[in-house]
Length: 415
Image (cartoon, rainbow, N blue to C red; front, side, top):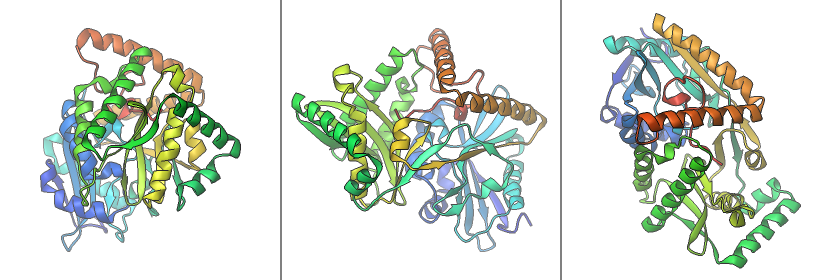
């Protein structure tokens, strides 16, 4: 017997073999938008392929043949090491397994699941599992992986419950003085040209919002000498694929929001919803001083939140990373944890290195100015190095010296 919670473990190297079970658990299990097929399949075919990550789907079956757990992982070679980590890489904010509600996993069950899967891979057995940025609970259900030894992730995520209507939510979150200032800024922009909230439901507007987002991000990164993942062909292909996904109702799966001043889009927010929760993935704003002084990003965020309330969404998150505006709108700080489970002597070496990197990053996070300076210096040096070796900026740009694979790198930030 493999475990009390399951009777058999299957390992699949292609999504098609597990897609029916994935669809069932996606609907039943409390998971984030980042565990959905709509997000991960386009990621696998674009960024995953560019980073040479091959899928590893681990399915636990009970005696009735039902899939009671599904881990959507990927295998990547890193300097001679075989590393298994969550699919989605640095583009995700929350990583979770899909566990069938009502099935109780013990620590022994979770450990047996991972070891059985590794053994089933034979010569492709990973040297180490690196399972990062996991919440301790989601949707009121505890995360069974938290039963294994773990350590705190260097950063938190930020989330909030939504109100029945946007006006009530904003009145509770923003002071009268803040709302007055935002109205003044909105009026100042409206005097320049017509100010309009647009969405990506129209394909032409969807492309215009994406074009603006990428142009702004690439330009901003270039100005700050930051290696820009956004300039990579695979990154644009990923978002293009997401924008073509459709919900069961035929609506665009990816929600693209823009604030337009005349014909010019001056702020964007991009995200998606799942199980009543909207997750903001990335955003941008126009850095023209005449525009930026009116805080177009903040103005769009207030309209985005109101839109989500109107849709009946019950919760909202702004992802990982510390920022003032996140604490303004989000009253819940979501602690995250990392699991590093070595399976070989080589894996043990990598685990020590990863522990050291994590401690350094956690320590630097306590001194944000130092952290920001070192991060800019490292990305600048990496960018210079990548220009010598590669005609295109590297996809897996990183924030720490000698990084681990894709999921230790810098991620598209909400800013």
